[in-house]
Image 1 (cartoon, rainbow, N blue to C red):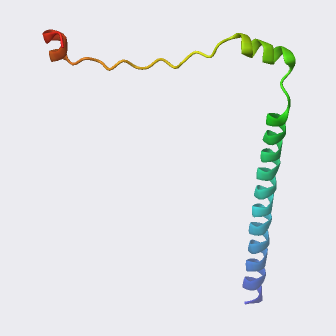
Image 2: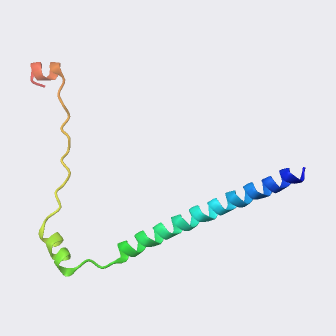
Image 3: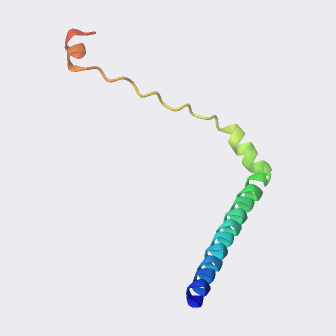
Length: 73
Protein backbone atom coordinates (compact mmCIF):
# COMPACT_ATOMS: atom_id res chain seq x y z
CA UNK A 1 0.00 0.00 0.00
CA UNK A 2 2.88 2.36 0.71
CA UNK A 3 4.28 1.65 -2.75
CA UNK A 4 0.97 2.63 -4.31
CA UNK A 5 0.97 5.97 -2.46
CA UNK A 6 4.56 6.63 -3.47
CA UNK A 7 3.77 5.81 -7.09
CA UNK A 8 0.74 8.11 -7.05
CA UNK A 9 2.88 10.88 -5.56
CA UNK A 10 5.52 10.44 -8.26
CA UNK A 11 2.90 10.42 -11.00
CA UNK A 12 1.36 13.60 -9.63
CA UNK A 13 4.75 15.30 -9.45
CA UNK A 14 5.47 14.31 -13.04
CA UNK A 15 2.10 15.60 -14.19
CA UNK A 16 2.53 18.92 -12.38
CA UNK A 17 6.04 19.31 -13.78
CA UNK A 18 4.75 18.65 -17.32
CA UNK A 19 1.98 21.23 -16.88
CA UNK A 20 4.46 23.81 -15.56
CA UNK A 21 6.82 23.14 -18.43
CA UNK A 22 3.99 23.49 -20.97
CA UNK A 23 2.87 26.75 -19.37
CA UNK A 24 6.43 28.14 -19.39
CA UNK A 25 6.90 27.18 -23.03
CA UNK A 26 3.60 28.78 -24.01
CA UNK A 27 4.48 31.94 -22.09
CA UNK A 28 7.90 32.13 -23.73
CA UNK A 29 6.45 31.77 -27.23
CA UNK A 30 3.79 34.43 -26.62
CA UNK A 31 6.41 36.82 -25.26
CA UNK A 32 8.62 36.15 -28.26
CA UNK A 33 5.81 36.84 -30.74
CA UNK A 34 4.84 40.00 -28.84
CA UNK A 35 8.40 41.30 -29.00
CA UNK A 36 8.63 40.55 -32.72
CA UNK A 37 5.35 42.30 -33.45
CA UNK A 38 6.41 45.38 -31.46
CA UNK A 39 9.65 45.82 -33.42
CA UNK A 40 9.42 48.96 -35.53
CA UNK A 41 9.60 48.44 -39.27
CA UNK A 42 12.62 49.87 -41.03
CA UNK A 43 11.96 53.10 -42.94
CA UNK A 44 12.75 51.40 -46.23
CA UNK A 45 10.16 48.71 -45.61
CA UNK A 46 7.53 51.30 -44.72
CA UNK A 47 8.37 53.25 -47.84
CA UNK A 48 8.07 50.19 -50.06
CA UNK A 49 4.78 49.16 -48.50
CA UNK A 50 3.28 52.60 -48.91
CA UNK A 51 4.41 52.74 -52.55
CA UNK A 52 2.57 49.55 -53.50
CA UNK A 53 -1.21 49.82 -53.27
CA UNK A 54 -3.05 46.92 -51.69
CA UNK A 55 -4.87 44.85 -54.26
CA UNK A 56 -8.49 44.20 -53.45
CA UNK A 57 -9.36 40.56 -53.29
CA UNK A 58 -11.11 39.53 -56.49
CA UNK A 59 -14.77 38.84 -56.03
CA UNK A 60 -15.64 35.42 -57.33
CA UNK A 61 -18.25 35.89 -60.03
CA UNK A 62 -21.35 33.77 -59.62
CA UNK A 63 -21.35 31.16 -62.32
CA UNK A 64 -24.42 31.02 -64.49
CA UNK A 65 -26.35 27.82 -64.73
CA UNK A 66 -26.87 26.07 -68.04
CA UNK A 67 -30.41 27.42 -68.52
CA UNK A 68 -29.35 30.98 -67.80
CA UNK A 69 -26.65 30.70 -70.44
CA UNK A 70 -29.02 29.23 -73.00
CA UNK A 71 -31.79 31.80 -72.46
CA UNK A 72 -29.42 34.74 -72.13
CA UNK A 73 -30.54 35.55 -68.60
